[in-house]
Length: 326
Length: 122
Image (cartoon, rainbow over all chains, first blue to last red; front, side, top):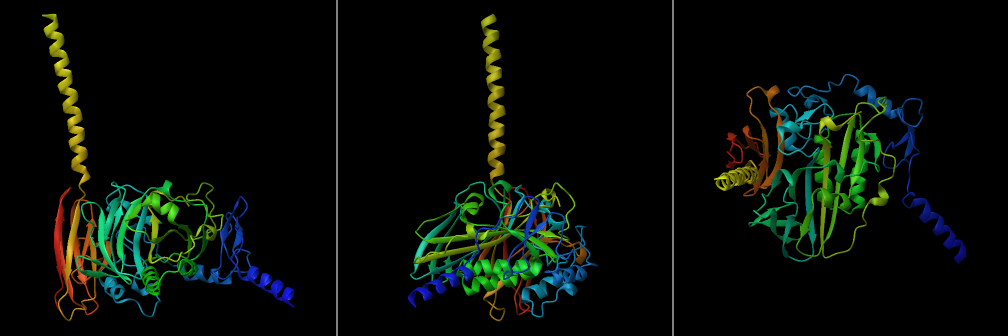
């Protein structure tokens, strides 16, 4: 009886455990219908819905976006408010729609990427809204310092001091800087391509990619507030392309791209999702950059650790238009 | 005589090299200071003092020509900093109650300007 129970548990754990590392053969890329479906390898040049029976809704996605004006001009951005179907947009999104035609883009946009000429710096990877959250069992004072003196910032909140640091007091899940409570520390920055990886990831529809990122943050044990902030913000700011390829970057890459030094011992989990928007996955160009992902990214995901002080960072990045070749 | 000419030649070359590398160093140092718009937010009572959205855009009276460059949520009495290229910008603050603030600024190279985002009741 005990042996039967052991066998049952062994089979059960293997069925429901994370899948083994998954790599597509050369000439194909990794595609996933949604988080709960197994990844598929599609031959390069083939889009989901082209002779593929598992992706009926992908065809619907393409139909919904047939008349989409891709807004290549700097001064004419779509989709505007009329295109957004979310029934309850955050209050700032309703207001932003009244003032800015590119409200539903992460910033100044051109073609498939950021219009980098509007921003200082030169790094082709534009990290949007990395937010750092805290969970601490005790009240602590410490510094968080950007240790690269040449870090190319675009924005910070609160602003950094002269040593590129935030001097904080942390209490439960809030940072206090100069006596003001912040739910998270925020920065935008530019970084180099060579700091990141483009082998591991997945392509899918816009909605599925949002879901995959959300599930990844849950696996990293982000708080409910962090998850809600991520979802509310990026549902609005991810441009309305039908497909995206996602390349998650974890601590190894982030400590090269935006090295952060914390002055006390803490479990610091960092993730940045690099997104490439696509009108179609039926890519005909043989020389594409970044390459379509071929490997599973979940084995690279760091395991959350039990610690008195936990810092969690998430961010989403887009490349500048001129480096994308699709 | 020849010795004097040789000494003068090397003195001139030394001065030239010194000036050249001093200029390179001076230019490098001057470019280390970023061009930024730094600000603090104040929201009076009745303007949802919890969080204010601060927006930075290009300047245009024509909606279609205006480009949103960055935005950040800042708590009441909190601070922010936008790193920009020299130029003209519009800083806007809004709250969920509909309170607002708007200011147009001009930023020169290597300049750090301050903006007080003081929300006005609608």
